[in-house]
Image 1: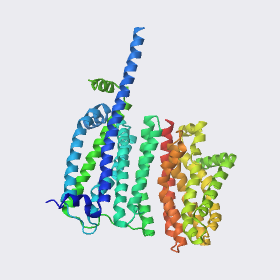
Image 2: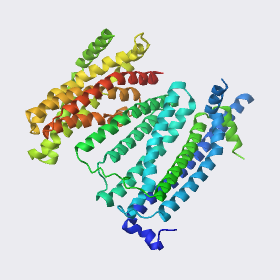
Image 3: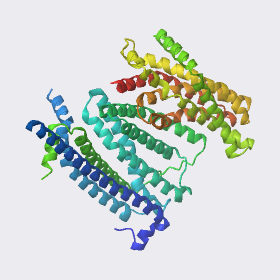
Image 4: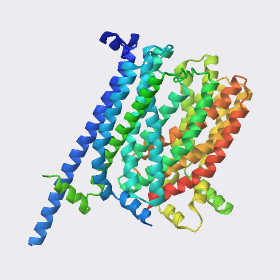
Length: 66
Length: 248
Length: 222
């Protein structure tokens, strides 16, 4: 079923290893890095918005106390 | 009438945000499943191509990435048209959430195209009609992102970006036609990448990889859209509730 | 309708005449950029002849872009643009007038000076004629498409660079057919096909672009 005879053949890709793995490697890298960046951006946005929310709440409390 | 109501309800970020949150894990799972199946078929089972040897296996990411890059631009233009016609808040956010993924897909298409071109044509880059059009598509993505990033007012950013997308989508066929014309005149090496008759396993592998790229793009775009929603709707009650709720 | 267009053209031309330095510097930019190429690639006539169409056209593209940021900016600053947007006649008509005026002060001078520069590149008289014709035919499309970019970037920081980022990819068909017409003439194929496609592009963009620009201006003015 599996086309390759050995793992070495698979890596060599019939001499096209550099090109094939260069393509797949960069694709994998981008598909790994993009979600991480999106998740990090989301986390920092949430943290920032929460800080703002708390600051707003403090200002409101102060104005009701007075 | 109820249809209309539902559409508007769906288009409101307050409804869309939790819905997208629930959908993202499924799209990620589907993407991984399709990706593994596609890679198994394409990389392990599929036989070699008699013309291009093992180098042809780049097709399993080159073609899906090219399809996605073109399709995402069309989807963005679709959202832009909806946004300009019905003035919905969601559409601008979706277009902006899709743009970076579309640009990355265009980049991947060029990158894998170059890595394919080197062994097949002997150079990293040929001014082939399709590669050139893909490059211009990347420029269009970059222009859209630069424009929306330069406008502080989000309403204006959405509308101006949307208009640019529509202008771009009208121009894409003209650009493609002109590049094709230019290419035939200059007798560029227009080697047809997908011409050789493909084995059934190759075709299946490619389709599965395309599905994997679809699911991936949807998941990433939805995740990005959720962040944009929080940011833009930060003064609404639902975002405040959301932020307070996730603290636990 | 024609009256409005003519009135806008007249007004913009009058304003442009007060700032002739801008027009002159755009022309000199064109001349200098074109003259730099032989210095960069060497003086062999054969090489220059093949390069000439592309070099002249790319330089023309860049030269017409120089004046684009000001297309709406001055009117925006003094409030004229808002008045025009509120006026009863459609804004697209006004923009059509402005686009034509922009072409008269930016595209037309380039077409007139291009054959002189073409001589530097050892082009034949037939090729020079086609070069002038293609620039005459193609630059209105550049002004039209450029107006969309100028309207989208109105009042933004870094507007000039952003404008070129948006507009240059959309200029590609004009560049291909414009330079292609001259190229085909140089190589003896005849550039008539290119010229008719270029004319089609120009008419399409002159019909379509002012309305897209008007929509973009309304977004910017909101």
